[in-house]
Length: 221
Length: 85
Image 1 (cartoon, each protein chain N blue to C red):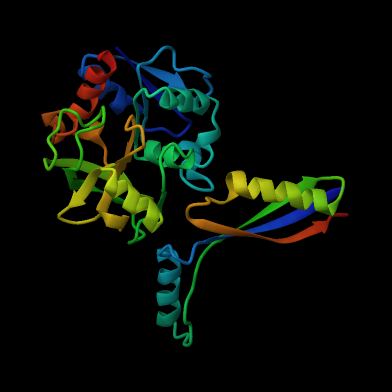
Image 2: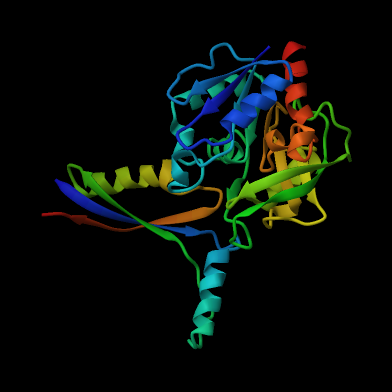
């Protein structure tokens, strides 16, 4: 079971994502963004950071990196793709997920633990959680306010494609407190909080570890 | 021929613009009255080689749709396409 962590120029959570994936027992390795394939990966992770310095808009330039064709093909084949923070922004820019992530409502960069509620266990990355379970994970972003038109939001809710919701305070003004969503095929998940920064007790929370563990189980199945 | 195209990218009116609100507040604090609203967008200048102004405009429009504006959150307008000496 192989997990590819894609590195863009400006990725900065790549090592943490790799460590969390490896800790789940996976064969985890990096793939450079100029690569045209994922080296046979079962799961692709787009990590957090500031790809291309967030120039123009976060994720706007990274989405045209050569590796994104391979990521899109991987997604289209129904295989798991996880975008964390900047990775979520890239997936939205690439239209692999609906909506967009824009400047936080309060304008400030927000870096602190938040509480999340798991809204669906029907994705490869949340299968090991219970619906309604509350998790603690850090956020660290300036552009994390999820926005979409009402029709898209209604559809996401109706199809149970909101994966995580902020509870006990919304750090960025995201519409309907959305912290993470999935695509129609339920194999592509994006979230703003950082599960890799909450993947062992030493980090203050291990609530995020199952995001990676279950990616392993799903890929094997 | 060389042309300069100026593209204006603005946040959709339906999307909260906290930058515009912050600027509006700051203007009020500086004593400017009568500021009913502020929105902050971005201007992109493109230097384009093209056979004609029409071709430059058509190229710039494609660039807006593909990269310069996010269709989910932003509107764009091509303000000017001027021949360069």
